[in-house]
Every structure is written in C-alpha cells, then in structure tokens.
Length: 291
Ligand code: G1P
Image 1 (cartoon, protein in one colour):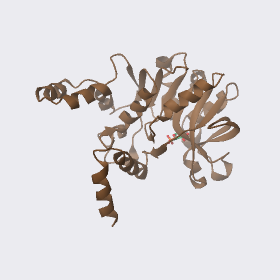
Image 2 (cartoon, helix red, strand yellow):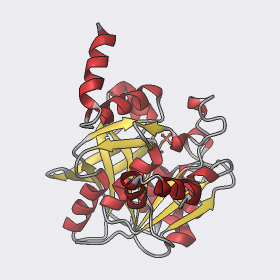
Image 3 (cartoon, protein in one colour):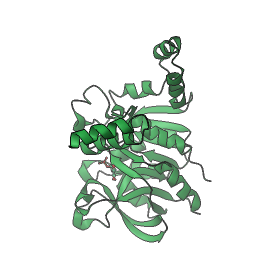
Image 4 (cartoon, rainbow, N blue to C red):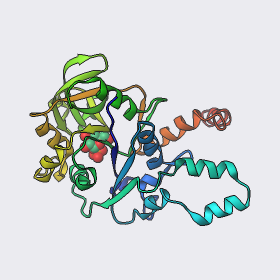
C-alpha cells in the first residue's frame, strides 16, 4: 500500500452564498447534523491514513484552528460533570500535537493559488487535497478509495475523484476527458475548468478530492489566471498531465455539494438518516412535513 501522509484543506473562501450565516463564522464550521463540514472532511482524511492536516485559511477563520485544539474550560467542565462519553468523543476527534498546520492565503486568487500556498508545508511528496464544500457519504471514504486506486497503479500517477453530472451542470465544475478504462479507474485525456456544455469533454465532473504529485507546485507558481479570473488548479493539472499520468476514479458513495443550499440541506437529512439515534424520529417528522 502506498502512503499519502499529508492533506491540504483550502478553507479561505468567503462563503457569500450562505450569508448571513457566514458573516462572523466560517462556512466550513456550518454543521451537517452535529459535526462541522470541515470535521466531516478531516474524518475522511484520517480514515484514509492521513497524518498531517494542512489548512489554507484566511481572515476570520481562526475558529477553525480553535476547533482542532483542546478547549480547556469546556473539557474541565465536562470532566467535573462526569460527561465521559462527550470527553472521549472530543478526544477521538482531536488531531495529535504537531499534526496540523495553518497558513493564510492572504489574497483570494483561486483554488490553484490556495494549493500553491501549501508548497513549503507539503515539500517533495505526493499529497491529498480535499475541498470541504464537498461531502461524500460512504462507509469507506472517498479518499481511502482513491489511495487504494493509487496503490494499485505502477506509476506515480495523479488521481482525481469524478462523478457524473447532468450535462446542463457541467459549466459549474472541472470536467475530464476519458481514456483507457480499467474497472472504476480510467486515464484522463483532458481537463477543462467550467466548460460550456458544448465544450465539455464528458459529463464527468471533478468532485473535490485529489491525490497530486508535488511537481504541481512548480506549475502553479507561474500559472496564469483562467476561468472566472482565478488561478485554477485544473489548468495546472492539465499542464502536468503532459509529463505525468492522471487517472480518474469513479468512487462509491453519494456526494453533496455543501457549497449550495440544496446540497447542504440534503446532506443534513442524509447524514441524520444514517444515525440510529436520529433516524426514526426524523423519518416521522419528514413524513409529517411532506404530508
Ligand atoms: C472547484 C474546482 C472544480 C471542481 C469543484 C468541485 O471549483 O475548481 O474543478 O469541480 O471545485 O466542487 P469551485 O467549486 O471552487 O468553483
């Protein structure tokens, strides 16, 4: 099994689509059931064996750093009150000392720029990238599936999680072209960020999970602005694909685009319906609401 030790989480976005909820609180701290979005994505990374979590933050994101630290007052109070279950749960979620890093993007120049900001923290090794807007619900997480696929390949490839989207929605995503296919994995022949429907090479969209080789950083260093006037990761990956292999993985599981209100609301229901303590009552409530 090949190891991927480090993962990047870009969390600098403004979250304008969720105002006023995100006026004083980062969008990554919005909760799906009782866990912040960023916690769900960190859970996925830790399940996949990631050892070091790198957060690309910005102004007003300090609470994310606090979330991944001890909260002495809270923990003292829980301990005094004998709340052992809650304390154990908090301690299970807490990354170990020295296993998190935070750096600021400073300027909102795009996803490619955010990833480039992690270059010193990642160094010269392959790494994972998880976009916290996207949740993938599956017992074996999306990133763990990607590391399985990565390990099965002989070459040091780059892996991107992909899924089918309706053709009228391809303009919202990065889209890949499909080459030689083996099971759920295929060679990527092209990549376009936010293509018009007629220019899209397929209807397979990039889902917000990547395993990338460190050579991407040199390309990002000089990457010109692309779609939306932003420095796009997809453009840099296209350049890297001239010298390295890229594979797509059609992962198992359902994704939720929690950057959209419908995706976020649906994720809350879907995740709650998987919880034994909530599902029966929620089902009844939903039946009532839907008449
Ligand atoms: C980013 C990526 C895009 C990908 C999407 C997945 O776009 O640039 O390739 O398909 O995430 O959510 P964004 O949603 O930041 O515009």
